[in-house]
Length: 305
Length: 293
Image 1: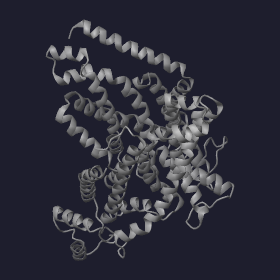
Image 2 (image 1 turned 135 degrees about the vertical axis):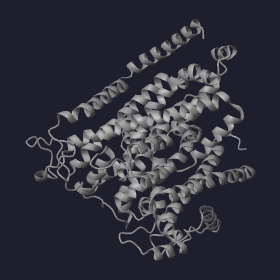
Image 3 (image 1 turned 180 degrees about the vertical axis):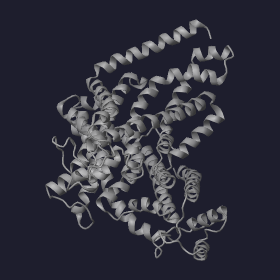
Image 4 (image 1 turned 45 degrees about the vertical axis):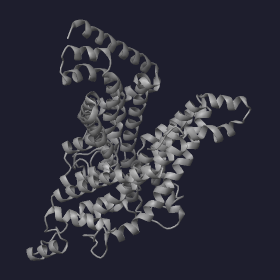
């Protein structure tokens, strides 16, 4: 286990380096620069700015400098928000995004798995068809369509919930729902399919023959193996929730991290774009690692190594 | 290659497809969805010719007007006074076009990559699949966003960018299938006759992959449409006055309190299309995927 974790960490290093190099080169290759403004700067001033931010150095020196900073957890200064470092911006934005994304994932897991089990236990009944039709609808309505529709219904017409902003819990309901609904739909389908397969297996029949109740069978015997595909989907799901939050944060005016990404790219805020990409890249890699560990815990057949 | 080998190959192909067709036809949801998609495709291609307005015509007097039969703005107008019906249809053209072309791009890359890795095997396979593993771990959506921001909103770029991120799954599936195909008798027979590796891949391996590939193609199209809409929603898709469903949803979301029709019509079109493609894809999987047999 420890050896495996160590090897996985080593394996993540080239992935990270490729990620960083890719983003770094792409940004430098882009037309336009961080100091393009409406009013043309004096060439001397621009040259001074470039020197101050080390943009006049050759690319490999800049890359080395960036890596050196990263190794010390320093993402550099933001080019656009001149008074802040990228680290500070991530520190203010990420907790908000984490709250949104975490709640959405939690909601998706609980509701999705429950709905999937319900459908599997009532296979080919009305409940099953109802759940499956709903989940197909959920998959087909992307979150950037779902979000404004939710606002239209619950904020504009019904006035039950605020349309945006960030204050108390009621502000969180709509964005979390918009992020979670497609994932709920997907997880319900996954859970249903694998639960049906598990319920057909011999050890479940044995449990039934011993007179266990359905609840006991599902909770104590069927759920663990049935969750395997769900767990392996959690990696991609995290990535989807993170990218989804880019639009959801925009729609609801939530001051999270996702919102920075597009504006930073538009403003050629090199360091902020890099910071967000690297930060989220590390997050996704770390989460995939945790998913693999959870997988090994759930499935005794899987040997790590 | 002898005619006998060719005949048996054709016969095997036909029976697989005939089987699949029979299963698919019995699946009512999938059949209905396929018809809806066909109808939508015809509608977005032919429809604009019969609309009262051009997609970029600005009806100054009737900006942000609701749906009305009297003015022949059946879906209403947007905040510049452009007819929403014809814009929704034009947006559909772009969305479907991107769906098909970008899927084709990912199909070509994925099948080529997967078949080569699977057929040659050994170190080449290990290396190529290691690359795929690494690419899997990258947050690709971010790169597509960066690409669109930096290099402008060119339609060709959208095709390539979206296609380039969607081939990973295809490559993995194709490689797995190729591994099992390459030890089959007809491949060994071709090898014994001295047929070159790429000719074998092209004539013997790839045709036998098409069943599995067809399933993933139908499931990839809605994904791709979704990605394009996502980009358009962020304002990174096609350029004004051209439009796509994602861009229309974005415009609609901005004014949903005063002009809800601007959101609802394109949103419904987008959702129905994705819904139908997912249903057809599911039906195809039931019909063609050897795993479920």
